[in-house]
Image 1 (cartoon, helix red, strand yellow):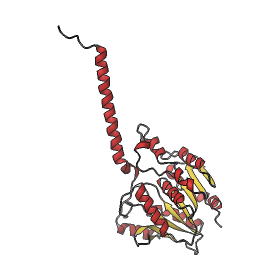
Image 2 (tube, rainbow, N blue to C red):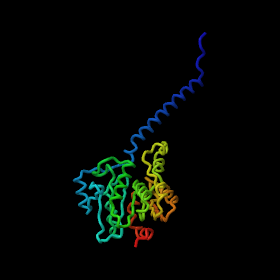
Image 3 (spheres, rainbow, N blue to C red):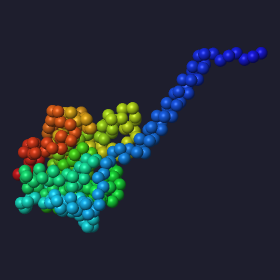
Image 4 (cartoon, helix red, strand yellow):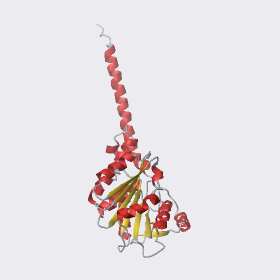
Length: 280
């Protein structure tokens, strides 16, 4: 006897299983590809020769900043009038560099006599190495240890660098007098999941920069600036960080401001920020 023909329902189930397996395979491959390339997606270093860095620094009246071993780790511009009121260490975003952040030194030193230190991350400008959360935080540790200890120290972080600033504040709370964070996030996984809602970004992320966790061990004054129209790090993530912080704090939110717009708002809040930091 001949075997009965396959039922239409059996064929449909078989095709659905094959399609499901194909979709699952594609999704796993996509997750693996994103996992392997995530640091290329996250970090955008500006790589220059030492000669170009030196020329750019000279044009901006910046000096090479070196660690205790004599290795270059960024740039510095001392306050024009000494003694300075304090020193501020700047940690920039994923596409920045020390020389490119000279506008912070320009703005700050027009408003107050602060020595300004600009940290360069491994793999940025002419600094050797590769950027990862571990390498950047180690560079930040090194930078803080290279700062003079006879002045109050403040931190300014922008975008990705707000996680670095939060790390320093939480790791060395007794050394940091005040912090200002421009376009921050509560945890890097939050904007990552926002931009890749179809992926388990929280699980795949290698570099997390948990600002909310780090700030739990810091109790000094924190100023937070966010753009209401920020498309890179939406304002809600800055609000989460602000709401979860238990120490002295102040929030400035700018209507219509996108991500990069926030970086130019420091002069507008400087006087209030100095009051929050209780700078005399």
